[in-house]
Length: 186
Image (spheres, rainbow, N blue to C red):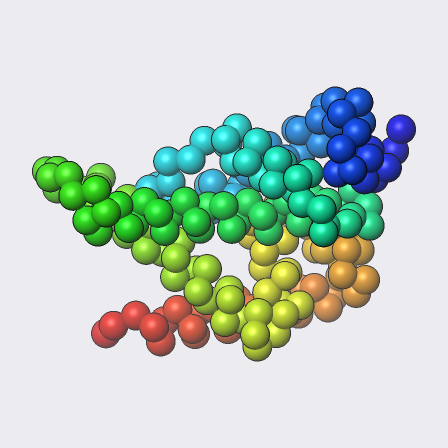
C-alpha cells in the first residue's frame, strides 16, 4: 500500500496500517531527528529515538492534520521535531534557572550546555519573527535546517522553482543573521 494512504489510515486509527507504515517512514524520521538534534548544539540531551517516537505519536494522534503525500508528512514531522526540541530546551532552561533548585559545581561543559539552550530559544524566537515577515522563507529554513531537505524537495513541496528556494534561503539567512546580531548585547 502507498505510504500516503497508510498515513491517512493510521491517522484514522487503523492499527494494521500503522504497523505497515512504521517501517516505511522510520529511517527517514530518524535521519530528520538526527539532523535536528545535531543542529541544536552540544547542550541537547534528547535522544534521536525519543524525538522520533514523540513526533510520530504527535503526528499520528492529531486529528486535524492531513498529508498531501509522503514528502509533506516528512516536512510536517521536521517542524514538529523543531517544536519538541524547543519545548525540551525551554523546560531544561527553566530548570537550570532555579526550577528545581539543585546546587551544582559550574564547569565549562555546564556553561556550554546552558548557552546552547539559550541559542535554541533565540533561534526559535528568530524563526517566529521571520515567519511574520516572510512565511515561505521561514518554512524553507525549517525544511532545510531541521528537516535536512534538499532545495529540489522543498521546491516540490512548496510548488516553487529551485531558484526561488535558493533566493528565499539566502534572504532568510541574511534576515536571521541581522535579527540575531541586533538582539545580542555589544
